[in-house]
Image 1 (cartoon, rainbow, N blue to C red):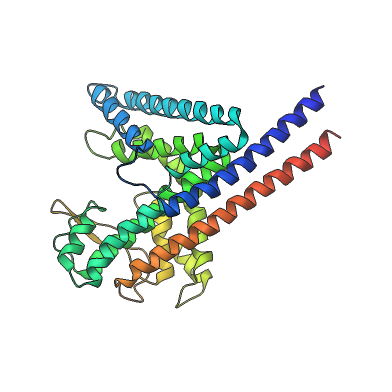
Image 2: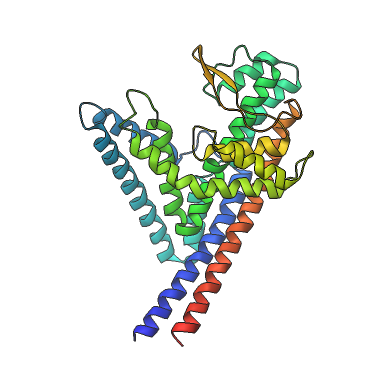
Length: 342
């Protein structure tokens, strides 16, 4: 009796991994062609509204770190419960319906199309020789002052944005989707949204956003490193070997203020043989960021197209990694069944 029940649980677990894999592929295709139309309803907008409301109610007085933990827990519980209920309901109707619903939900957690389009809005005016418009478009996607940047600095801002956001905007939610389907992908996106809204090291959020920032670091730790490896597999550097590029990535990734964002930025810098990081101004205040990569070639507008191409190739390779992981999980489960329960 126990043996039969255990085998049935193993089989269901394998089926769910297969369902997740199919849903992930459909989700990437949906995002590739549709993206995030601005006037469509979107879970991240609802998450943002919930976080803002809890921020207003809780982020005051004493014990702000504890209140931040309460806020984060409430957001994750609400998002996770709704996601589980929705996917379970559709799977009860039919497995195909469940897979499709998961695909739609997962697609809302990734932003490949919108990330590349944001970079192209900066590239196009540079191509047309309109540096003022390029600076203006860059200001939509970065927090630094852009009004006095020259062309190479505008390019740096766009390339850094794509490099830093490839992991938390695309590959990390896909990683968690393989493990736990749409609910885990949405929970990841909720963690990331909490961090982006309250995870600042300033007087208002240093304590209140502590839990959100720490959990976001943990959630991105593995995917960010896999992403940098996928970047290096997908594109060979022009001036040295992949082994040398990996040494540069390992050397520079740890310099970034974030324990995870530096892996994508260092990978892009090493592969394109450019230098990222350096001096930025925020509301007129100087911020001297550590540099990433070696400046073998100067930054130019074509590098925006290069980094967009890298994103496409990286996502494909990352998907192959996920599929391989799913297959290995299935093989391991089958081996355990045949070894222990035959």
